[in-house]
Length: 114
Ligand code: 5GP
Ligand code: ZN
Image (cartoon, rainbow, N blue to C red; front, top):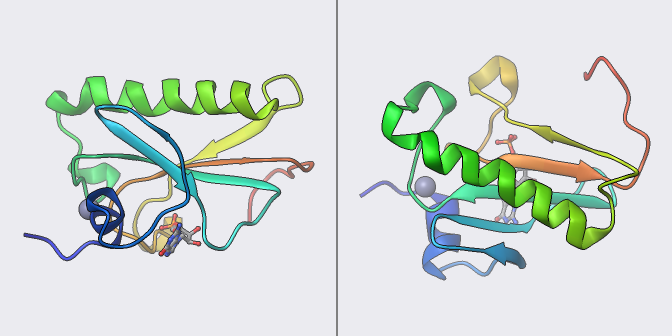
């Protein structure tokens, strides 16, 4: 059993400000938002990094993006726009090792990212 912060949020051991949930994904507000909208969308199955993806995760990965689309619509940001990001390992600045799709919106983004 891995000791994982996001698995604890899934299990209800740690409270999460949940904005969306279905059988395979959970979405909750980031505790330290970098934009007016900053939501983390995670698979309910523990997957540590993008490097751990396997063929069997194809459906779940699609579910993460469909959840992002639905949440964006619910939040009224579909047309104004948003950014979705996965960070992977040290250079990608991943700090929680349960994959999560950042959904970020509500201000003008810049490119390239830092
Ligand atoms: P990463 O840097 O791994 O891509 O993103 C991890 C994200 O998790 C960060 O944006 C951070 O603010 C968020 N985070 C860390 N701990 C918690 C927590 O306990 N609850 C919530 N909701 N977000 C967290
Ligand atoms: Zn986990």
